[in-house]
Amino acid sequence: MLKVGLSSLGILMLVGCASNLTKTPELAVSDRAQTRVDALMMGDYEKAYKFTTPGYRSSFPLNRYKSSYLGASGWTFAKVNNVQCDESVCNVTIDIRYKSAYASGEIASQLTEKWISIDDKWWLYLK
Image 1 (cartoon, rainbow, N blue to C red):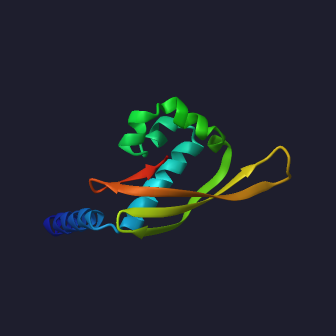
Image 2 (image 1 turned 30 degrees about the vertical axis):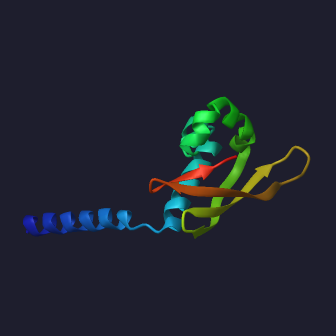
Image 3 (image 1 turned 90 degrees about the vertical axis):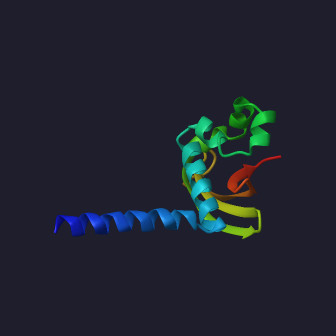
């Protein structure tokens, strides 16, 4: 009985690994974009910075990236809403909410991003 259970577990693990290899671009980008905005909300700018293209990172230091997203740690909500891909480019829409000292309640907004594929890996493209 134990052999059957372990065999079934092994098969399930293999199926799970195989399904990760066949992620659609939309799902892969959605996962990476959500991980990035989660890091921004936690103030982990170094982790979020690692999702930018290698070219961006070679030209712009972490401090410059961080200065563009300082307000993100004040977001109360951030969720990838939509991902549309066309070959090696994906457009991502992220719904965000934040509190403002000038308005009561939360303010809803959207962030749009472009992600590109380089060597079969998806990166946030920043100019």
